[in-house]
Length: 334
Image (cartoon, rainbow, N blue to C red):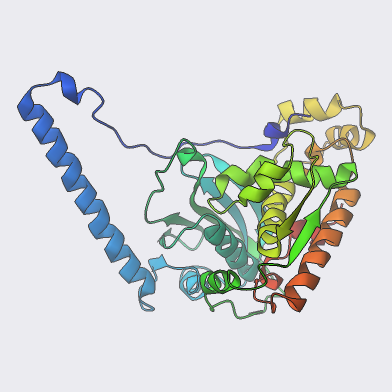
């Protein structure tokens, strides 16, 4: 099955350029240059003001990773259930997560902000539909449009068993910075030996371009089409690898007629059964790997995650925020 069939699409915005300025008169060129400088100054000014607002505990319209929970609590019902859409700068939806509670919602956004190096976000909307977007557009490189731009949150119900859960107000960005200094000589081997493990690797390649902090050692050590490869990696890189892979594996998309047709034509029985289920409206990324099955992927992810946790606790002093970012697929029931 084509893995790209589980992706969604909408449009965001672009900035015009002066591609033909050299064909105009001198005055036009000067005006265009000054206009661009003024625009840059305005962007920098408002960027600085946004950073100040994000640091201000009384301003609920801007937030950073560390104070995101308290800021979102000003806008959302903490006893609610929410659908979360993670949106690229191009406007395309990178993935969606359905029916999660407030604490899980905060964790997912924090996790993605850290991976995408989003320093601050603006918060706009209503209690039923809230938009959370990065305050500074990331315009680096050809992958600009694929980078994470923000999040869309929709209230879909009420959670009866709500509790405040863990305190997530401590800055996860600070934790990640501190992790840089720990256990540089402690590494974990990733050597996929079965189709489920290879599916996890291929899932990483299905989502890694959306993250600024994708571990380059992982990218260069494995084949994106087969999932084959071998290498020893710092436990911090393994954390990124597993979390990014999980984003693809557990990400949801509508079961469109095109996707249903592809599943129906699969040589794998469990994929054909999904296509034949008239009540099913959504699929997850893990369902695109017909060479294995969902339980095997889940079990192999659990083995790799357990190894990461053991190394993290023993040598990393538990500094990586793994408890707040446990792969979602580990808790799924198929």
